Image 1 (cartoon, rainbow, N blue to C red):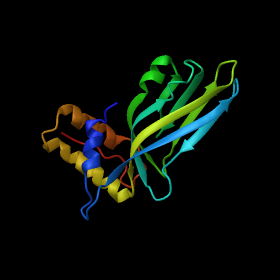
Image 2 (cartoon, one colour):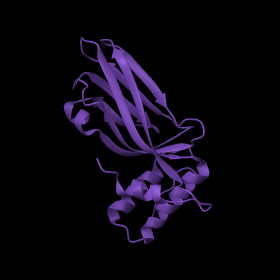
Image 3 (cartoon, helix red, strand yellow):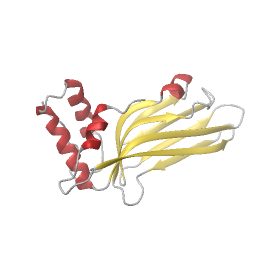
Length: 177
């Protein structure tokens, strides 16, 4: 899968003092054995020294058995994904922008609905942001897209990213045309 243009744009932003404002990152949650009917839960937040993740893709191990799990990903007051991990979801993953901060973690829940032991593995791709100031700088750059000649689609994606709950002291920041 290619990296979305908006993520490439964000990863190209530099701090006024120099250096990239966001770096590529990834996470993997792997549970080797989940017994029939068992429910597993996880709460995921950036590690110490990192303020936020700007996520853009979630995907599961394609070796997982289709329709073996019901589950959800919950973040910022809404469900990003809720349902059965079907063959299509396992093959394609879920593309969505989300901002996970130390004060606003993502929650994952899955239940094995088969009569056999199963394993679960969910992976995420994101940009790491070191501070709230850096995240607010990214939002400022996204707001500036409206005058940069970017396509309406890019501006819409930037607007969606800015209005996601992020736990910043600035609240929701939208891009306006």
